[in-house]
Amino acid sequence: KAGVTQTPRYLIKTRGQQVTLSCSPISGHRSVSWYQQTPGQGLQFLFEYFSETQRNKGNFPGRFSGRQFSNSRSEMNVSTLELGDSALYLCASSPLGALGDTQYFGPGTRLTVL
Amino acid sequence: QKEVEQDPGPLSVPEGAIVSLNCTYSNSAFQYFMWYRQYSRKGPELLMYTYSSGNKEDGRFTAQVDKSSKYISLFIRDSQPSDSATYLCATYYNQGGKLIFGQGTELSVKP
Image 1 (cartoon, rainbow over the protein chains, first blue to last red):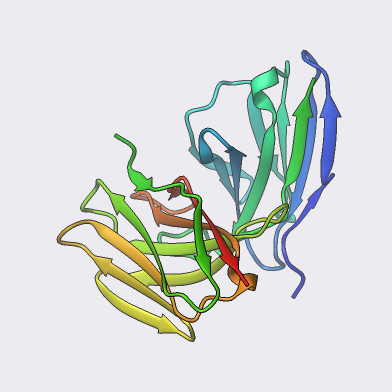
Image 2: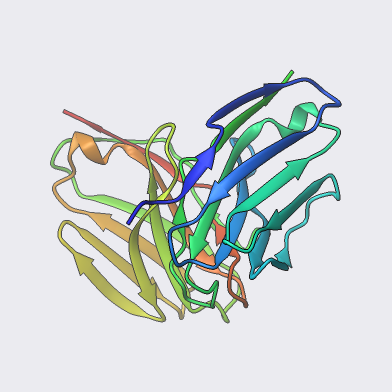
């Protein structure tokens, strides 16, 4: 089975711009979770989607949003970029997103905000 | 207090050493515990997965959970340079889809 894929792998944006990142889960997985990884804060949960619905949300401002399509692919969007949004954005997929399901991570998208 | 605490290191050991990586957690309701390994410029990959208390062994790796002290450990025997990576402990929050991670420990195994 192909793993989780994320595109693009690298992005450079300037403050105030917006960005959209894409994630394709493992075939058959219906849950997609997004995380932000920074040296200072580590890996932090952004949100989780299942069957095109956001089920869980972390403590991030409303500038961070996402969606999921009927084929389980997911996108996340960050509007009005700030310097502090520079990070590695990771998505992870699991079969149902149930408590105890194993989450499989993609390689991440490295976002740099100038 | 963070829900999962992990010493970020860095930790440097000679090849062949036994490595001990540790995390503590605050919520006694946590039941599922994972160790992920992350190489530079890669996403985390699942290394070990344990449920509740006890030990789990897989080759050179042993994961240990002590729920009485809210302490989780990963032991690496006969460490190799290829083990050099960041190791992240994680647990599920009280619902699916959301993992809580420790800060990650950067490990370097010197030949």
